[in-house]
Amino acid sequence: MKIRLWIFAGLFGLSFVQPMPAEAARQCGSASWYALTSKTASGERMNPNAMTAAHRKFRFGTKVRVTNRKNGRSVIVRINDRGPFTKGRVIDLSKAAAAKLGYLRRGHTPVCIERVG
Image 1 (cartoon, one colour):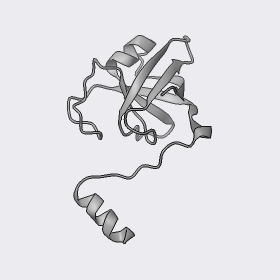
Image 2 (tube, rainbow, N blue to C red):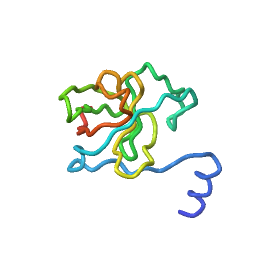
Image 3 (cartoon, rainbow, N blue to C red):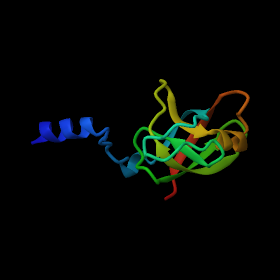
């Protein structure tokens, strides 16, 4: 039964992501930003001006607070995509979120993230 389910999911581009356990609701690492105009893994079009982000495990629609560890600025973003796929990165933010956190020119920065909703 499991094999058929995975084949079905593969045919239709579905992915099964385990939800983040409560004890792992806070992470620290590196953040980067991206500004594509294609569709996200959730099916909505990527909007570089929206306060959204990509995370490997948080469910779509989860809101997280991202705090820049270099300057203390923080923003709340909504998870609508999967990623990042670069080692050491914990989240990819939209261009607008990166600008509010003050690391747009640099491309990446150390952050801590925590689930807020």
